[in-house]
Image (cartoon, rainbow, N blue to C red; front, top):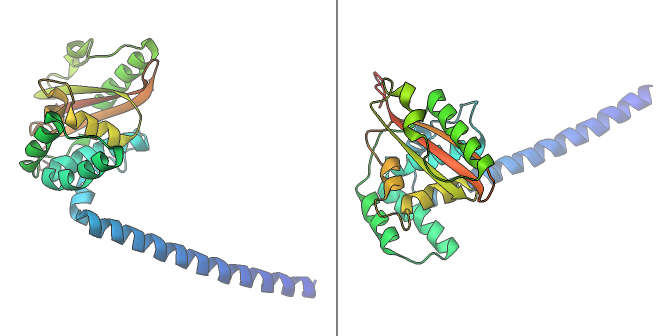
Length: 227
């Protein structure tokens, strides 16, 4: 028993030391990686923290939280968003400049310190229901938009809706809606960069014919001491 305990103690000690070393190496690697990304992107920690309004929300899935995060980054500093995320997206996907991408770059230059979009349960419920119904039926569009907001007219003094169909990658969703290729009135872009809005609900669900659909509900809500 004594021999066993000694062997166990020696084995455990060696494992513990090795584990600690590996954890330390991993921590240093992650720290350096994050530092490098932060340094290259130019995004300061305060802005990143402000934009991450959905971080502790328990209703939203991670990809839905990221849609809000990227949208908030564009609202916080449009010029930097254009120089980092938009540029990398176009470079990595091979998208060629069009009048829509060029007008987005112009619009983003004037965007700075817009209210951050805070997730709200009522907007999330509306987005989720519409995303589920659209996904199951294979429909596209904003059918029933006014009906969905009937009971919220007294809560929000302004509201809007974006619907996206395609992949479920959060950055793809945000940038493609901002570019709004082929949409003459640029309605999706204007919703995402509208200074009247400070509230949001996002839901990403499977879609019968388009893979996935993402519904974004926007609202302008009076909050004392916020936005």
